[in-house]
Image (cartoon, rainbow, N blue to C red; front, top):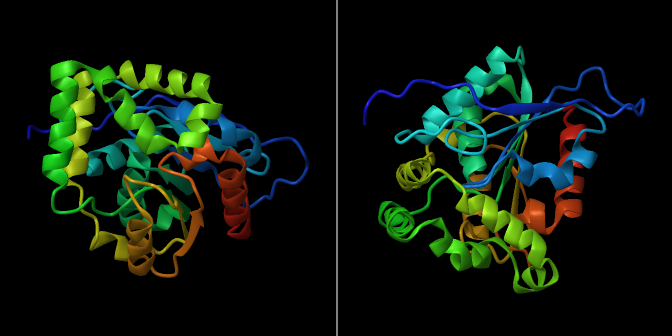
Length: 269
């Protein structure tokens, strides 16, 4: 791999709501999105999460409005996040990461220990398993050969329960359109990065209070992966959403938003 320069990410700051209930000791909440989507994946939770604190949403390297990149690691994506916070004048943060964003959040929180006030890991894992390089490589190869749209049915089946797909066809199609517009070399690079990702030993160094959330029917990062995270991260707690699959903040925004609001508020974040 060639040397990869740290990049500043496209991001948006959402000020705290003016309800008079914001605490003086709260810190910004950083939200990190999932693979091949962008910061808009959090839109359904913003009204809840910004009531008591400012929220910062970013587009990770190669996603959304951030520059494309053909070669990088999850650690380098965490470097981007830290550099973007520095450039924005933001110090300590609470962090929530979804899927890919959860991988980046683990890398960030295990390294920038003093900067991470509280951590939520959603539908994610510290390691995809021994076959991960091959499986992620196959997914990248299919996208390269047949286009991003060739993965549409595969993605929807992993993201959402059958009932949600039937009830929200327009939302599903909007997400697929966003998915299909991804920069292909960046998508392939992210697949390689996830295939190589293994933070099992590093997550033990996370000291921030940690909440792990997973859908009971998540085929991508099943509850066993979430349980493993909880066993490795000191003091981490687990919440399983029955019947949900891999994009719980989209499928269950009220529940996930409520869980995050309660968790971060309880830890002055």
